[in-house]
Image 1 (cartoon, rainbow, N blue to C red):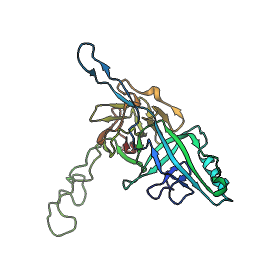
Image 2 (spheres, helix red, strand yellow):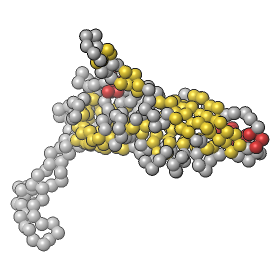
Image 3 (spheres, rainbow, N blue to C red):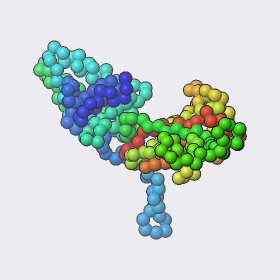
Length: 309
């Protein structure tokens, strides 16, 4: 099941495989914590010798989202099954599940959360098929909200352009073609453009986004540099053809071929993975490798979602 595939209109909330909102037995009136700024931990400290304070970093805490005034409606002979589906969809789980909310014309946004509280009043509503006053609380350890579609950009190692063909190889038709007649291919041919090793990642949101980076071999000591900040991720290991080194900057994990940790191969130039983020707007990144490592099959792919507070 794709993330948010049940969400088709404003008012829909999908948590895992549970859908709330229009067209379902579960209607809600209030959603708190979704559009709010999450609580912030401030590193600001008071000045000891002057008025005011020294501004420090602001770090967001978890985002707590509560679906309030939840109404459950079902035929009297099916109300138990409908309530049971809500109970099964909000049980405690080990890993966070996708939480997709569509509020307005801007479209749906995504977070990852776990249900931490559930309220289903036990009243005479069970006999009538209408239960009111319910609520579900969900907590997202990453307080940012993301666009549903994942973006990606790739680059290969720098390669020179072939330039003009001067015809010095003894071919039957050598020399430059200076024609400017009405043929479909007239004039000079400069060859296919070479690779620059540069890619641009565009974060359309208003919060920094942590990308996932995939280096593919054959390449030795792959590196990715943020041209705006100078931050570098570089790993001192050789990747053979078919090898993939995955760097998850959110979790800080560096994994070879999906299983073996290679975090220890980070060079002294490399910044901590969790500090490597994509700022709002466009970020230019360069792919480089050790001297002499120039196989055109080597590549880097950057995957991310635009992030919002």
